[in-house]
Length: 248
Image 1 (cartoon, one colour):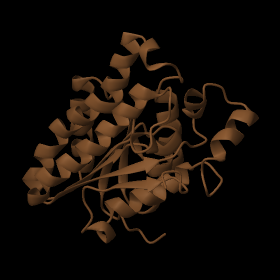
Image 2 (cartoon, rainbow, N blue to C red; image 1 turned 90 degrees about the vertical axis):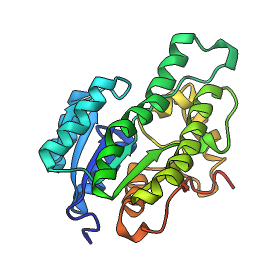
Image 3 (cartoon, rainbow, N blue to C red; image 1 turned 60 degrees about the horizontal axis):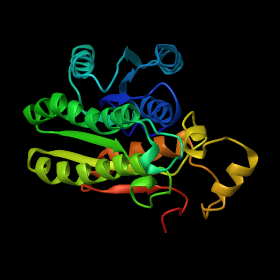
Image 4 (cartoon, one colour; image 1 turned 90 degrees about the horizontal axis):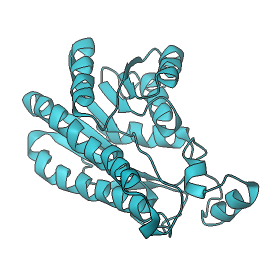
């Protein structure tokens, strides 16, 4: 490995599985110290044990948990350089008017409010030190919405717009804000997106991806590493598709 992230101190929310795990593994391999913030203690502990990362049980929708997450990272590592807002949830495909209100509220709390809460804690730290990178994991759903996933689509569209708004405001402070738009991957969320995980449903979805495969945790880890490294020092406000051509 080139150790492009040597000396960087990072938080990865939802780092215990899926795309988040891929980002944690890549960051550690490239020299970063990483705190995995995840509600799933078992998976967080598993990934931490395999990589040497730190972990903390965190519900990103809760202000107290997010404050504790940033405090833990700065205390354990002596500072913070990178915040990856990866944690997210979806809802099963259904008519937009059918989604129960409590599920709608939960989607906004995890996919939207969590980014506000994390920024509220991390941005003052970044401003004080004159540097920092925030990486938000959005989705191709925020660019090319799929029917029957209206409120998930909308939450990821918000992430893309928030990324751009944050980038413009924070650039003068030396803080970059970027996003990734993955297409669906073979992760724990896949069944939720598809409604049912069958060979037929997979084939139907794969037919919409020109490269012909799902995105992988490794794909997201590689893209995240680039955007959070000095190689991307002139890049801010972008929402980069990692989608095999899905949004073309």
